[in-house]
Image (tube, rainbow, N blue to C red; front, top):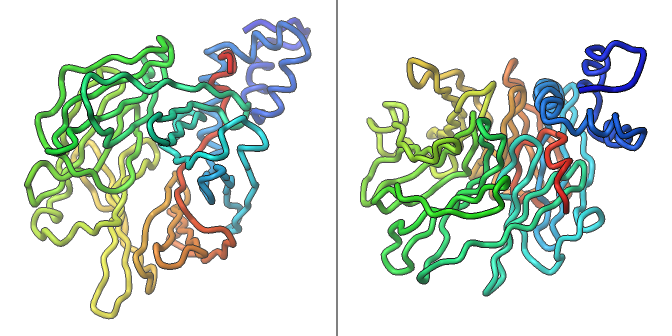
Amino acid sequence: MRVENSVPEDLIVDIFAKLPVKSLIRFTCLSKSCYQAISDPQFFRLHLRHSNQSNKQFLLQVSDSPLNLQSLSFCHHQLLREPATLEQQIPLPSHLRWKMVGSCNGVLCLTASPQPVHYLVILNLTIKKLKRVLFPNLEYSLNHTEIGFGFDSCTSDFKIVIIFQEIDSKRWRQVQVYSLRQNSWKVLSNVPNFLYKLYVPQVVVNGAFYWVVKPGNSVCYSILTFDFTDETFKEIKMPDCFYEDLAYFYQFDSLGEVKGKLSLLHFDVNSSADVSLEMWMMEDSGWVRQFVVNVGQLDAPICLAINDEVMLLSTLSNVGRILSCDLKTLELTDHEVEEPRHHALTYTPSLALLGEEN
């Protein structure tokens, strides 16, 4: 990274790495050298590390047609909201019903499924960069049952994985992976020969995609992972207590990523209708329970999203309520929201896709 200036280059890099993305975008207009410095892949990785430590946010989807998002952050237990209506910033077809697939390194993946054409979009909301991804061609009539989005750190490549199933038998028949770097799809040969029922929202942790699944006719749940680097599947067992009591796994339990580790969030309702929430984290030695906290009487609770500091909870019965839980103090705070809650995920503003063309 070279910027023509009397200030030492490493100091400039350190200062730039701590600036907000929107400020950096303005600086790219100062000179050609500034643009080259800020768009450098090494600087992108450095800036992303700083953002992950200090600027993690939540994106809350409040409508799907047109797609309307709110950026949420927390300061001293206060909920800060900033509207981010995409139709005013990015030319997305407003007549479609959009859904957030996932977020990784500051990039969102969106999907909309009008008949007979499916839409896939990769975009950086902060710098307003968008790429339409053509849906893969299929040799026979299949339904797509799950879409995952993540990042291959070895090749610095954003990827999309789609699992297709037979319409009648529901068995997995084909898996295709899209590479943004190559702008193409490929069919994988290592498709697990099982029928999977996929539950709870998925999550990306350290370059791997995780789902909670139920293999075939099994009564037991497990976690399926897809590695975006070697493009292979693997199954992971749940904590032992989930197998000791088959009713233990509640349908609104959720996966998350906390401090770079896979977490499992479990809701339990006692005889007095009070709901307790426990969090498990995958350590080198296996699953370790981190805490249990009583969240009161919540009807159909659901974890919207989680980051290193705050867990965002809501209910399926009361769409005007959001509950935040401080992961350090386990303090709960109730927040009133006017908009209906659809879906949320964690988001870190970044410079990804800066060099890409819309």
